[in-house]
Length: 621
Image 1 (cartoon, one colour):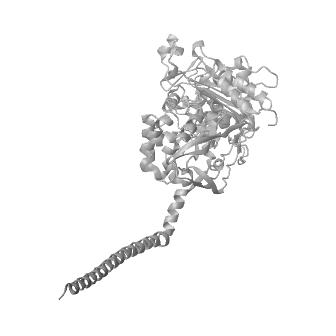
Image 2: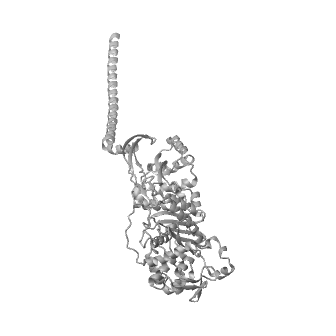
Image 3: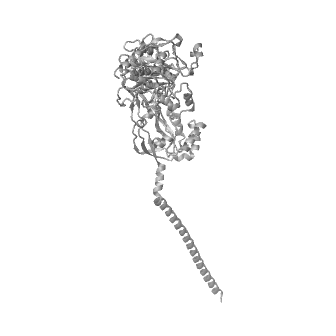
């Protein structure tokens, strides 16, 4: 074989090999392409499946979650109803404020959020700890209040740090405001945040910022004053800032209420009582029972109660002498002292034990059952021979000791109960006490002891077991001077009280007692003669009283150290009265805790109050 033939064979072989190699490469590329296409197809199918799951299968759920993050529901507080005095003076209204709240979805991060707010809202460790406990105990998916009544500086700081405070928002609010807190705190009361127990009884009051009446008329008429919340849906961005309003349901304002209180007179009574440490002053319309003024002194600033009161402010209130939080008008229970003698006198007249001319001799003491009972005038040798009217005017204890010994306690109790002692008056204030009118049966059941005659003697001058409230005393006075028509002391101007039958006593007997009360103030031998009103047509009648809170020993009497006792051991000073004498319009009750004798302390205050009432309250109002 020649060289040319060999070369041709080699070229042919090379070409064949090249073709085979190209075929192998094409086949290998095709396999790889198929594998890639297969993988791409699998991924595409997975992506499509995932999209189907998200968009179709779970689309509704994710839409809800998305809207929840994007759309927020805000409760809009209603305007709490205003409270007015009888002539339209505002005693309680609202002010626009702002508060910071925490989204309930951020509860898990609340500790960190509170630490961030430390410098912004001036939180101390105690405040943070209290808020942390509140957040942990919160069981409801409602915004949690972090701070009320934000200042403008605090608002600015919260806006500046908003990106770092996810879950913290600022809401517009309204805060209850009392223009005259010290003068009206015990009548109006105050509002505050609802407790968990209160929310459990009424879930609608658990809404953030919804404060409810805690005391006074704010509590009694809370459901009327509160109104109903509105709803507003807003769209928010990632930082929880409102982008736009979506929809809203307006809130419904609470009802306004108008009181019987005459605020100028209320303020006058408050100012008059300021010279004493602790006491009460009440003025009642004798015909209707409308309370024209009712002051328990000292008062407190009820505006402090509407927000998160500081520990320091709270301690100042609870530690103040005179117990400002105690509404003495309705819950102070005191022995009525000699102001109770009208009930004893009426019981004696009704039973026929005495008449207008019956006399008893007062040597300054009364000996009975192995004990000596002193008259307040014992030091001067007693009052001598006294009839009923003179005994009332001079407040002779021995006269009433003698009368009560003939009557017995049960007959005295029957008259006192008919005039409202021993029962609530029905005024629209929570926490009213009943007082106590003792009887033989009461002691046998409660004390499991027999009644002793000496206890009747104590009851005759309004001491011993007898207890009454200042409101019960002024109610008694109103019914004595209005023709024996029962009255229900009330504060709501439009309140309709039932018409009750006249008290079943002889008007002639009432006239005898009223003549004695007129002499108490306007006759030289009367205990309140120094407090008479000299202006013609404005004269006042009344009765002084004092009640011991500690026993006075014979040694103290003989040594003349009775008035040297510490403040808390001195007797309470009382006066009940009415004016004007000819056509009574007003009844008054004044009590000064540990003030001493009623003639020297309570009666002069009552005189000023009665002058103010006749000057400030127009005839026919």
